[in-house]
Image (cartoon, rainbow, N blue to C red):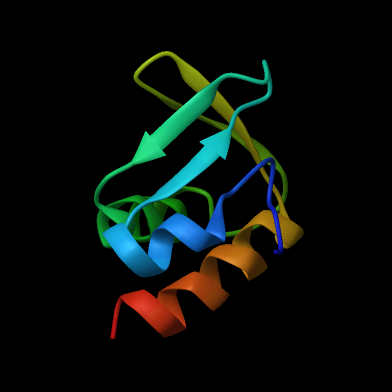
Length: 77
C-alpha cells in the first residue's frame, strides 16, 4: 500500500475517502477527495508549502501532489 504522509489507500476504494497523517502525526479524514485535491491544485500548485485544514497541517510538495494526482485519476473521474 502506497502512503503519502500516511494516506490509507485501502479505505479510499471502499468509502471514497482517504486518511492522511499530518506533519504532527495526527490522522485527518478527507471526506471530499475532489474538493481537497482541487484546493491543492489551485492554491499549492508549485513549490513547497504548508496546507492547513481544520487544525491539521500538511507539507505540500511535488511528491504529495503526484500521489494526490494518482488518487484523482482513480476516484475523481
